[in-house]
Image 1 (cartoon, rainbow, N blue to C red):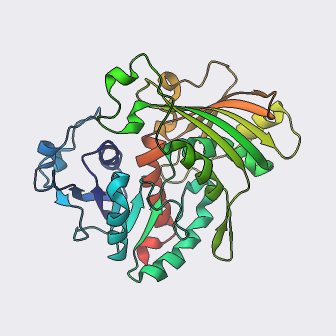
Image 2: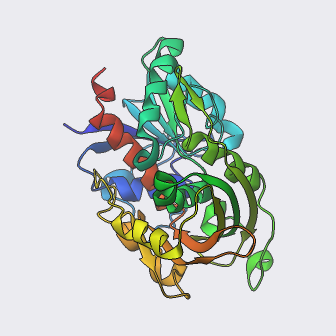
Image 3: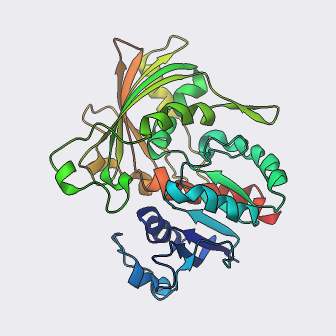
Length: 345
């Protein structure tokens, strides 16, 4: 039997992506749609400005949108809510016994909330014991990282498994879909680059330290990596591209680093792609228009690892911001929770 599932913020860009990705998922059934007071009480097809390439699923067209209150007929809710309102609403659902998988920033750095990329830090689910005890309802929150953080951490994963990363300098070129809908005004972004995205630098500089941290005494000891981020919005629809320079503690070579990526194996569970990381020797790859949908949007591409004159090495990374960096990762996190037995408790 499929798990009854609700979408909070169902009319937004991330909410729509949840609906698209879940419609054929064998584990989850969307039984509830919820949004703001502006949309609640309306049929979904009347309230949403549908921007996905596939049509609205027939069974959801006439479904009535409800308020984001914990009286929904489901066990699990995926939250695509705006951070301006997400924090309190997600707490309310978790305190009422729901499992909340959040794409919002509000609870990412809470001490007992996993900031989860399951291929990296699945052991952080042990934090949920403390959270479940604190809330007393059986409910809890698991969060996704920032979309650029996801791409950065997955691109670093093969290196950090075999070395110690000391410093990272990363410049992001972030797609306009990352700003939601309607997003960035066309007169601001067409033929232009906007060299500032609110709060992005801070997220990228702090979140990987938690993700790569180790559990000690039921708490996360953050990784000791110095990260400097510069963030830009660029006129690309989907796909965040990162230019990354790293300093490693131990000496190695470009060939050894490339070999680590080629040898790296995905655990390929659930919707995790068969090939988690793609490597391109071609200095002109990866590119959003060519590579963003590799692994159905769940893979990350790395290209052109080479020596760096300031740190040790530099490379390009690319990932799909609304799939691997948002809705797809949230669904993958829920699938891992099933595998770890959290829906049986």
